[in-house]
Structure formats: C-alpha cells, structure tokens
Length: 268
Image (cartoon, rainbow, N blue to C red; front, side, top):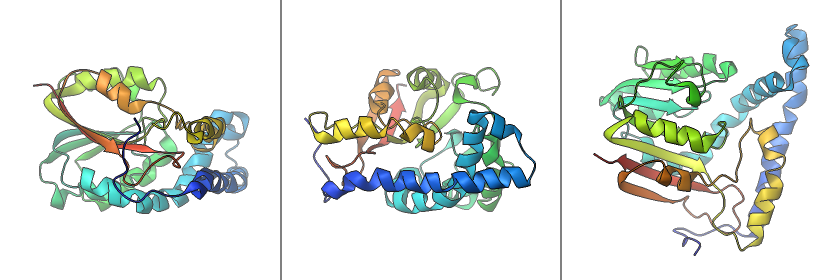
C-alpha cells in the first residue's frame, strides 16, 4: 500500500515540476560553453563526461541554494545537531548543508570527511566549510564513495555518522556502495538519510511518468537517477537496531521526484 500523506499533497500539476527543473539545468549549457572557451579550458569540450561536470558545477552554484531553501524544512530537523563523532558526508557537492554542522552548534562532531568526486565543487565546498567554522574539522576527499577503503583511507568500524543527502541517486553502483558503506559504521553508528527514491505509487500514472522523465534526468542532473529503490537497499545493507524512515512531508502520487527521510542505527 502507498504510504499515507502526513501533510496536504500537491495536485496533478505537480507532475510538470520536473520539466521546470530540467529547463533550469538546460539554461546553463551555453554559459558553460562560453566560460570554457574564454578561459581556454578546452579539455571538457572534448569529453562529454568532463563537460557535464563543468556544466553541473556552474548550474549548481545557482540552483543549489534554491534547492536548499526548498528542502530545508525537511532536512534541518534530520541534520541539525544530529551528527556526532567522526562523520562521512557523502556527495556534499558545494557544501550547501554545511551550515547545519557549524562547530558552534555541534560540539559532538570531531571530524567530517566530505566525499566529493567532482573537483569542480571543491573550492566552494572548502569555502562553505570555513564559513561554518569547520577549518581543521572538515576534510575533502576527492574520490568516489566506492573508493573510500582504497583511496580514501577509511577503515571499517571507524565512522559514527554517515550522512547521505540527495547523493545516492547519483553515485555509480549504489546498491553495492551502500553495502560497502555499512561496514564503515561503528556498532551503534547512525546513518542520516534524505534521498530521492522510486515512487511507491507503482499502480498509478506517476510511476510511468517517473520512468519517462528519468530517460533524460540523469544527463541534466549529473547522473541523478530518480527511480532507484534506495530505501530498500539501505534496509538490506545489514542489521539495524532502529529504523526510522518515512516519505517526504506531503509527498504523494503526483510527486515524480519523491524522497525518503530518516535515520538508521546499526546493530550493536
């Protein structure tokens, strides 16, 4: 059964929202091309993957703050003053949520590793870490989550908090990576989650529409796949003492990009 809404749901016109978001991303193609040519940085023009990274970095500088403002009422109760100890911040992008980890309000945090493979984001990520008073606490690791044990130097059982906010939709082989992240948590460690997921309304039009939108969505949103059953993969990753996952507030059968939000506590 689809989950019951916890707030008033949007109507059918909400199905068109992904088209608006795609148009925002498309707008930044031309400015990215111009910037690369004027700076004589022509390498991304010869490799579409490199160009997408440059394109998304420029787009996200504009759209990231807007996305944060939209999601803040849902994400803030999850993240603010919740992280503790040694933290893994997976796919932080430009660091739009780092203000929630500000050292002045989160004395329980001892270290945060920001795992961000897109080097185009690193400058702003470090700047946001400094602004949040996290100099000496926040360390950027420029590799993928799948490389943490090899290139990242993160050992099993050393992490108190894993943070994934709208990133598991984009990383390669997410089901395998979720299983690889689980052992990094200490017993009793927590996983804080706010992620895109496959709609639960599989019998409704939104399921077909979501799959249709997803044909182009990953190209315009840096590999983001909105049809992944990420919540199911998290539950299957290992044994949990506590699971508190629920749908995004007010999301229902007209949401093409729905979310799961909550916390999982690893078996002690």
